Length: 116
Image (cartoon, rainbow, N blue to C red):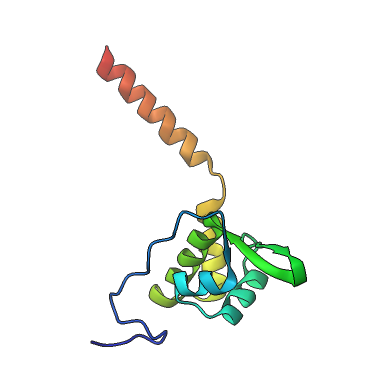
């Protein structure tokens, strides 16, 4: 089996995220197959990534941040985006768009037609 540049076997999936409120940087590194120094760098590059800092500046990530890190990892390592491209892609996905409202309006119109 071939290993990718991150040491994972190609096609191998990441472990499930446990039902916890907070994760240390080491736990997140294991869950996302990313080294802690990379996570600290990504915090500087992606505004959405803001772990809470406590005693001695220790980082604690919440579940949604672990999911975001997995998405960043996917964009960078699997889809081949640059940091800038991944930042743009995440901005497109997370930015509220009027497209969502128009899709909802169209679906409601279809429901009205079908129910009449």
